[in-house]
Amino acid sequence: MAQVGITLHYLAEVIQERYGEGENVGLELRYFLEEEPLGTAGSVKNAADFLDQTFLVISGDALTDFDLRPAVKVHREKKPWPPWCSLR
Image 1 (cartoon, helix red, strand yellow):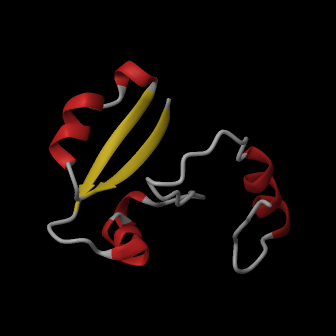
Image 2 (image 1 turned 60 degrees about the vertical axis):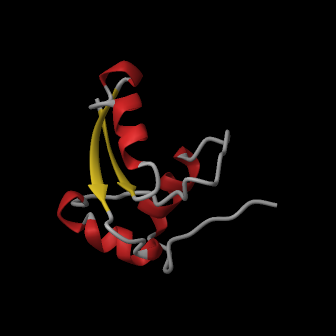
């Protein structure tokens, strides 16, 4: 089962109540709560103990339907720095 870390601030309780531990969506969810917004880098640092392998950072307002596996594959094979991708 895929493990997903979610950083939360706004409406954290609503999201946690809706998704619980993730069993209903086939995931293992772990929440990282922010008492005040930390920004992207701060959120990643807040979850650092959870991040022990390759991970993706996706903003909650970035709804996507594209397959991220090719981007992860390129990252693992070529180790680009900085590791990022964008689409037009």
